Length: 183
Image 1 (cartoon, rainbow, N blue to C red):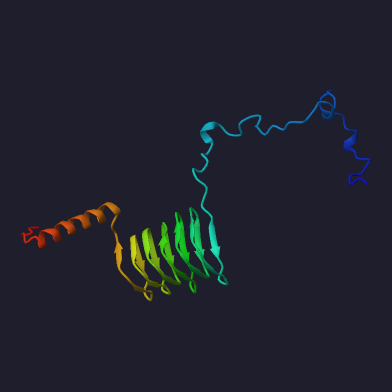
Image 2 (cartoon, one colour; image 1 turned 90 degrees about the horizontal axis):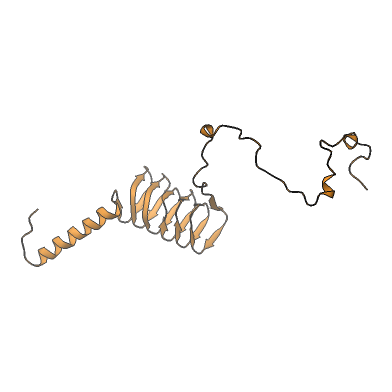
């Protein structure tokens, strides 16, 4: 049984060159190299350096316990208990809940987070956000209506934070030794 009609007009067309059919020449090898460059080298665009990270989603009807780590983005719409450590962004949707520590480039909270946010570049608390835990971030945006309970450190880079802690420790040690501290 054949799916092609036997009396095809293309069957009667002569070959472009007079060589024997390909089945008699051995295995066929395809070449995907263009015969000519479609654009001059100066007009070609460079390929992107790194592919965009994909987003993994925990759906609103799921409850998961464990640990998340990786380089992509994570969106939590359900309930998750455990630590999240990603190089990308973390988004906690409205109605979602996360119990655990967070390390991410950017964190957006519209639901509930019970845990600490450590070393994030940016943290955004939406109007419906509830955060119970400490925040350490480069930038913190708190929308009207959001609630937060915990210690907040923002605007400090690691070097400045370490220097500030060293200065405070030196000051405290001098105060305890009974020396006068002049600033």
